Length: 515
Image: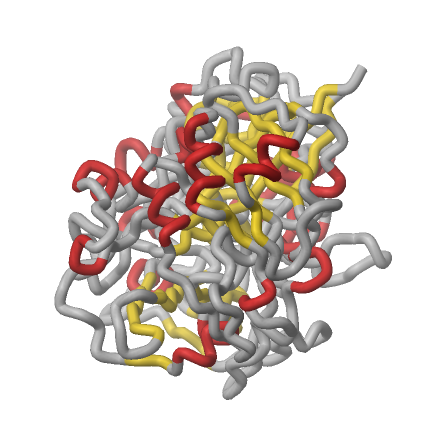
């Protein structure tokens, strides 16, 4: 039996005009209005609207030690994406949006259905050839993304390719599928005669079924890759969709996996597609250093209605959102994003490798170092403490470090409360051969000396750069590590498939084997 956990922390949205909501959440707040209608036209096509992905970089204080990004994308960006919004919540524990989906809802047995020969919307007869079990994650392999997709959004990919007929969608709902996915831009029917009284996505969502679109590599899935795992890296309370990172994996041999996601580039402004995450000149915009706690967690949902003839729903309308997120909006992976003036001697190879977050460092076997009875806020993790621990680290492990800090202290507190490693302790872990480190406290580095100022942490980032220069991503803001019950387990940490970010949003899955 597999026991599945999700250890990610969803972000909280800030109301308009409020920069504090990510750090000091207004827990009940969700945007309850549409800011505007985005109308599809010949001059502003559907691909231009929904493919939007913007990235802004700014300094935190007037020196090069801290750079942060503010990103914006839609709920259906030009990458693999998920939609889940249940309008009629039947009970307290019935998930209403993607942030509330339980890990068992996003992980499970994978069934790939080959429909590569379809010339029109996928019909019920195309599906009846295959045995579909209740609880299967079903992905429809059309090969459309392989044949017709470009790295930049194009109108043809949105508007000219077949989808799924309403009758076929009803068949899948009755079959009890857990998740439905397709390797095409949209699942909505191309032919109006194949549409129903509600959209395909709405039909699935109201039945409790998430929809994943724009998948990749479905033709390469082999029999040993029995599971699909669907990560939602930009996980925000109240979001009705967003980018997804999806893999097919062998749950018993987690180093056997296949990425089923497309990369996403900034669009229409492509200037951030550069060799390194950060390059001269320095950003001109400077944010207040003493507001790091708020600025690093800027998060906002801005609902809008997409409307026009190319919106393939019965009424030509679709509920969408712009999603804004920053470096620390939620659980994230940090890497060698920049090395100002080569002061930390980060190699060119590492800088180029971490233009994107490589998932080979984030998937596989894992172990846990439990320091929850040794380390509290602002305390130091040194070599002596590590040598006294009973942690069972194997070479190539993803190491989880538990201190139970985020579970109790993260919101409404300064980053100054974080405990941290010494460089010697970081070296001790590197020598053990770990390939990534996951922590349930705000940072691997404590403030030295304590700042006493909300939002300010004094550090030279030596520990960060020691890990980075040794090819070890640092995953911060994990939660619920106290619920890991075995010393050794498997993990898949799924990052946003973007580029040139200082903090890559991630979704953390863990599974244990029990008899």
